[in-house]
Each structure stands twice: as structure tokens, then as C-alpha cells.
Image 1: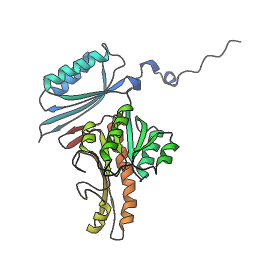
Image 2: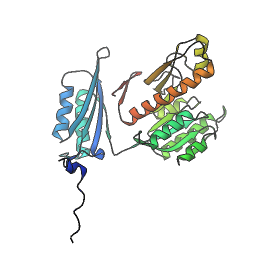
Image 3: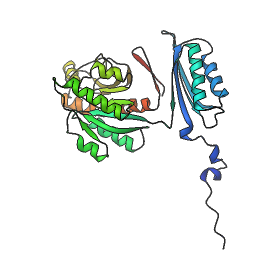
Image 4: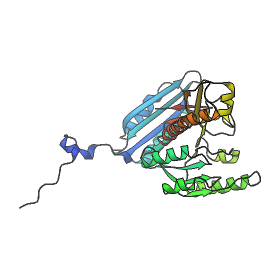
Length: 307
């Protein structure tokens, strides 16, 4: 007897052509910012259409005070009539004409992030679990720490763990070794997942708008060390967490995401810290995910986050 026909593709069973469906590796995201003026949206749309790109979604924002325009365009490039080099050249020409800052990210080029930790494990565990579950569209080639305490956590997930003990005398030397390691692994993003060290200006400047820190307070309130102690002393009724890009000004970088929860006069410092840990995990995870998905534009000391 002849062999039975192969099972039909589920897309074909619904009357769809699977070969015509956009493939994740063929999509790209274009982010632009510039002074607002007429014709910006039309120029970008016409450019992409002319190259055969199909816009999947587009979001834009205008800051009337700063007079700035921001846009995020995600498009399908599976049927480009040119190639990626020609498309990028076209974007560059439009950007030059309008004075745009721009960034084009291809979905097949996954970002690589290094997690920096000290002794607190909650943010590290959360990010590693989300990564294993496929929630974070990036790779984690290494974890860096100034203590060996969390090495077993990284080992559970099969990720190399590098220890650089830091003292006042060796801080710059150790940071240079860390920078060399990041360069060796082609790291795109550094995530300070409760890394209890102040980074030098040299390290921060090497990754501008590519170092995300989680601070355990609702900035700009309670900057610096022991914010839960400060919050308890003030008797606050809300505690918060803030994810921001690190700059040379401690805890003053562009804010990406924040959240708060209720507390009361009955909460001691330990209670505030316990409640705050849940916020720290979720706020940091959202900020990291948005960065990996190219949803953030930085201007001045602020961000536009396209959700």
C-alpha cells in the first residue's frame, strides 16, 4: 500500500500559507529621535516601503516642551527588494537630512548581557529563570561578582561565574579586568542586579545607556545606601524600586521603570526590605526586557519607553 500523505501544516489547515508568514529572524526595529518637524513620519514610511519592507507596528511620541520627535518602527524585511546594507544606507541618508539619531536592530542579532551581582540573590535568580523561560530576548554569557557567594546559583543555570574581589586599593585594576572580560565576550548590556559597588566613570562611559541598575527606592527619594532605613525613618506609606541607566552621577541616571507598594507604621526595616525585593525583581526584569526589545530611547536625562 502507498505510504499515507504527511500531516498538513497547521497553518495550511487554517487556509494560510506558512511560507508567507513573517519569520522572527526577518524582522527589524528602527528607533529614531530628532527635533520635531513636518514630514518625519512620511519620510520613514516611504523609505521602508521603497525598499520592500512591510511595517508591522509603529509608535511615536512628541515632546512639545523639548520639541523632540521619537519613533519606533518594527518591520518585516523578508521581502526586501534591496539588501540590508542598502536599507541601512537609505536610513542613514534620511537621518542626515532630518538630523536624526537612529538605531536599527535586526531580530536575528541577539544582545549579550552580563549580570553583575554581590550577595543578594533575588534579582539574579529572577533574571536567570526568566531567561530560561524565554522571556528575555538575549543571551547571558557570564555573571560577574565581587564575592563568590552566588556562584552555585549561576552554576545551576550553566553560566560561567567570574569573581573579582574589590578593595579600595585594587578597584581600578579589577574594573579594567572586568572591562576586558566584557569586551572578550562581546557584551552589549551590563545589568547591575543588586551589585553593591559604585562603578567608575571609565566603566560607565564605556557602556553609555547600556548599564541598567536597580535601586531599591522610588527615585529621586532616598538615594545612596540604605534607602529602606531612610524610608523607615521618614515613616513613608509607600516603598518603591527604580530601574535606571547608570551614569557618572550616582542614582541619577535616566529612569526606565518604577513601581511602588503600600507599607505602614507597623513595618520595620526588615519588612520594607522584604516587600521591596518583590518590586526590585519585577521592575528590573521589565527594564531589561524593554532594552533587549529595543523599546527605549534616551534623551537628556529622560527616557521614552515604547511599551
